[in-house]
Length: 155
Image (cartoon, helix red, strand yellow):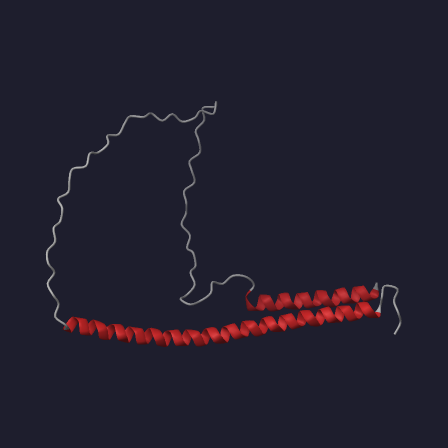
């Protein structure tokens, strides 16, 4: 191995250590995302079972309550409403500010309603790159890494 004037072997070793650390962090992140997806699906299935059981229990309670005799309510005293004085409007003139030139002001733009897309129940709103965009961004970063390495070694 030839020794370069910038430190050579030790810089290459440091670069390799940093690159391995970054790849390790990437793998840990992917494992974390995979675990989240797996466990959230399992949790969602358990929640659906619990919701079905709750609905069945509520139906049974409603049927039992419908069959049970109920007491008639005792009438309560309702107070009589009293007259509330109203405040009469006063004549307060409103004078628009003058700008010095007697021109007609342009009409205010009218708002136009636009539809806002809403995600389906239990679905994350779509934002960001998406699956293919994230893969392309990762490949672009890998290309930048390789090109920077080649330039560093060539220079």
